[in-house]
Amino acid sequence: MSNQASVPPLHYDRRSILLHWVSALLVFGLWCVGQTIDWFPRGTPRITVRSLHITFGVLLGFLILARLLWWARGGTRPAADSGLAGRIAKAAHGLLYLLLIAAVGAGIALTLVRGDNLFDLYKITSIAPDNKALRHDVKELHELAANALLILALLHAAAAVWHHRVLKDGVLRRMWPTLK
Image 1 (cartoon, one colour):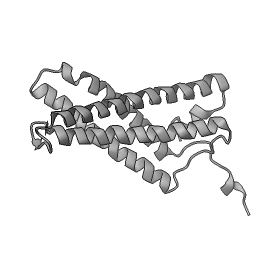
Image 2 (image 1 turned 60 degrees about the vertical axis):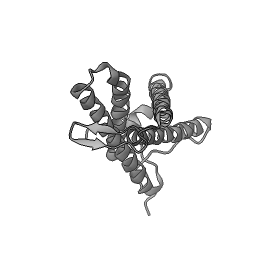
Image 3 (image 1 turned 30 degrees about the vertical axis):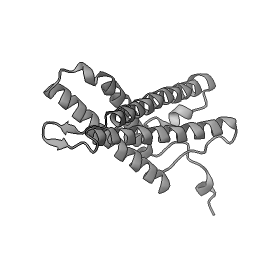
Image 4 (image 1 turned 135 degrees about the vertical axis):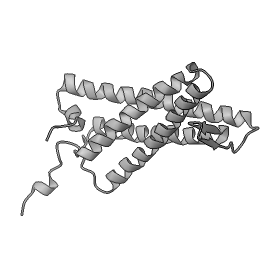
């Protein structure tokens, strides 16, 4: 009987890697757009940028769901460190997922509370048109979750680079796309 089935893989599988990097690009891009939406002139330019922000935010929500389902169904992952570093990494990944869900969820809630116009093609009617306090609070929650997510994602990236450059332990290579 072969013992290879119990040996953890050295790399994440291709789907996990793809979902990771697309999610990372979306998070960074959505954060940048979120910071600059108000720079665009009112009317079609701002409606288009906000519509893209909403559309890609919903796409990120579906990617989060896809990642969670892929992992639940046995997506390939390397074994984690069993020590303190492994526990910290696991906690950080859990917090990243919570912040992803919070940022996307609050963004969807903000769209529903505020109402919006998608690409001048579809009007989302506000579920609370006269409740400015609720709109403000949901917007603040969305911004807080997005900012915390970006900070933690940058720390996550810095830790990966530190592992690669200082510890030289191959952690970064496990999630780096490979050519096969």
